[in-house]
Each structure stands twice: as structure tokens, then as C-alpha cells.
Amino acid sequence: PSVPKRRRMTLDQVHNMTYFLEVRELPNVDDQPLYVYNPMLLPLNKNFLDEAIINDLTLGEQDSPIAYVAAFRLSNFANCHGPGRGVPKIFRNYLGLALLDKDLNFVKDPTHGNYLDVMIDVNQDIFEVDWTPSVLPKNRTKRVVKPWMQDCQLIAARIHYSQKRNQLILLCNEYAWPVLLQREGAPTRKAPIDDGKHDESKIFFKNKYGRGLHLTGMRMPNELMYKGKNMHYFTAGPGDFGPGFLEVWAAGPHTVLPVNFEHYPFVNSHFPPNPLEAPEPEPKSSYTTIDEKRPGDDSDILKDRDSGSACCVPIQWDEGKGGKRKLLLGVSHTKTSRSKAIKSRMYNYVSRVYAFDPTPPFNIVARSGYFCLGFGLNNITGVDNLPHAEAEQSDNEQVWGATNNYKLHIRQDHFECPRIHFISGITEKIDDPDAVVISYGINDCYPRMLELRKEFLVQLLRPGS
Image (tube, rainbow, N blue to C red; front, side, top):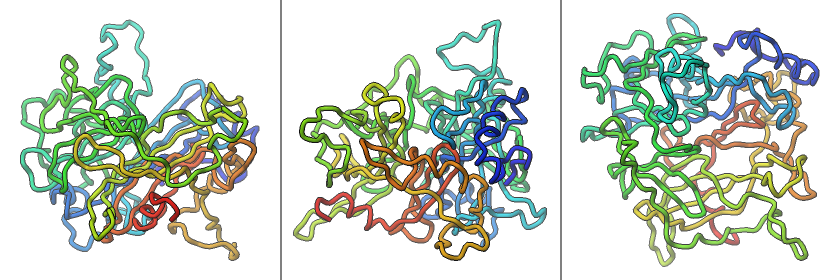
């Protein structure tokens, strides 16, 4: 909501291909439209999250409607009219943060009336404090803002022997750093990792748009591994007290990286930890899909290795004869291979769910076949013949734009779902541990979230279900 109207596309504009392409060429980047996609949620769950983090955002109100912190990707780049059309000369990626209620609606500040959401130019702010990745020299004569940080996740970790997760971590691609996120009016406090000796390393992020939230980086970004992407944090063991890991690859084989957010830097670049690979062969998919090889066709349509999309939520896995055990469930994705598909068939995304043992070496126990997720439903006033199942505030101008014409195309078949659906978050629903909220981006153009029962996802993992 904080994005000004001049940087939004109306329904007519997003349908207009000529306009869509022309605005990408506007000389001032700050005049170009912004697109919101790839959301993820951090639930303010009192069972797992330290009270101080929750109070920073609810101001200690016992009946506060705030249930989640949402992180979004905002960008001047979008694929609303298909991959590669209207690529801007200068890429700009921003971090969007918002407070949502239990029904996934944006929450308003009861005093000022504004929505509690902000947009932050993380890349500009780290540029201004002279941060660069460790692989680049700091004394370069020509310095420009680079889009190092995109698809950021806000996660919570347990440090200093806390009973609950007490330190927020911002994870953007392969970079992570401890942060403090507070609502305007929250009492001043130190983050658990703040020892008072590194004030010069703090980054006070500025809100480019919006008000009501303030993000502070307690240290500079720390590179966890070289060219990492689509990594997701989880804790090992039967409960929530085990050591931390980052899932690096969701398959081929399942690969994780030990990470300790207790001390900064989290990873010493001179002595990086070795990734752990699951030794057992991955199980067959629970069902076959149209991407499978056909008689007389030896071509693989999709890339060979699944990448991580979102992870993880606990599930109960029935071993038979009454035996059950805990597994962790995640979502992975792959896409049509650039080297194996003709240009018009590139960038078709599919997803699957998988479950793995929560203890090392984290072997995969079950995998579903591939699937896709759908477009947003029509919530436009006056349309009564369609289900109104979206959140009340989902009348996004982009939802019913031209993006709906770009559908998944595998082999010779088209499907009633986006060509690009990118699942960027999965979390347990507040007050209902048997349900999850899955969040995803549609054609790099707009966001969507949906609620599913865990039982449904578990059934996807079982052959013949």
C-alpha cells in the first residue's frame, strides 16, 4: 500500500503491451512502475518466537491484530507479458516489509491510519556505507549500486541459550546479517547479538516509501557461501532446539550447510563449513506427470536438479503399523532447461513437495510429482459468479492484467496456471499447526498466498493417494 500511485499500473495499463514496454525506458528509475511478488511470512508465534520480537511489532498490545511479518520483493522488473519482455536497463530490487493480520490483510496503525508497511532500498543503503561483497575490491574507482540483495527472507534464530528464537536474521541470496525490526513507538532496546562494541557496523535502513516500521542492521552482510541462492533455514532434531542449517539444494542430492547465528561473522570466509550431502538415493516421485520421458522421446524437458523454494514445516509421517515420526516438509522447483528447450518453451516452472529426516544426514523420505499453482481469483466488485476466496485487500491492479495470458506450457500441453509460479514461503498458520500458508509469486508480476491443510500435502507424498 505504501507504493505511490504514480508507480503503480492500472488495470488498463498492464493490459497495454505498448505502455508496459515504454515505461521500462523512462530515464528516471524512480518514475518506473514497481511490481510486488515472491512474498514470505514470519508468523509471530508465541510458542517459538521471543516475546521481545513480538512486542517490538505489537507494542505489547495483548489484543493486537498483528499475526505475521511479510517480506516481499519489489522490483522495476516484471514478466507480466512473458519472460524477457520489457527488461529495464537498470535493475532495481527493493525489500518490502508489512504487518498482516490472521486473514493476511495489511494492518493499519490505529493512531495515524496508515498501513504498517514500508519499502526499503537495501542495495542503496549498503552502497552508502561502502559495503561490497568480499570478492570485490573496496578501492574501485567506479562504484555503482548493484542489486546484490533480492528475494530477502526474514527468519528468526535462537542464540545465547534462549528458550525461544530471539534474533531476527535477514537472508538475501547468499548474504545474511542480524537485524532489529521495530514498529514506530516501540521502546529502545538492544538486539541479543548487540554487544555494544560494533556501533560503527550498524546500518540504519531508510524507508523509501511508507512509515511505521524501522529496520536496523546490527552488522554488515556476511557472505555464507559463494553464489548461493534459494537457501532456507531450519533447525535439526526432534524439537526446535537443535543446531541450525541452511538448505542449499533440495535434491540431487539433498544438500545443507551448517550455520551458527550465535556469533558474527556467521561464516569465516577463510574456513567455510563443508556442505553435507544426503547419501541415500532419493525416492521415486509419488506420481508421474507429463514431463516424464515418453516412448521414442529421450529428451529431458526439465532441468536435472530441483532447487529449493520454501522450507520447512514439521509433519507427522505414518510408517505403518501405527508407527509415526516427525519429518520436515519443504517445496522445491525446477523449470524447462535453457539448453534442452526451444526459446519459446523456456522458463516454465513446476513445483513439488518433499519430506526429509530432521536429523543428519537429512535423507529425503518422500517426494511428490510435479504440480503448479494457480492465478489469483477475481475479487473485483460486481463480479458475483466467481468465488471470493482471496484476502479482502487482494484487488491488486496487476491480478487481472495480461499476466493471465501466459500459462504453463510443457511439451504440447497448456495448463490453467502461470508460466512462472515461484513458491517463496511456507509456514504454519497462526493458531492452527495443522494448516500452512504457502506464498508465491505469479509470473514475476504479483503475489498470492493460500492456505492448505498439512494432511493434503502429506497425501501428495504417498503413491496412489
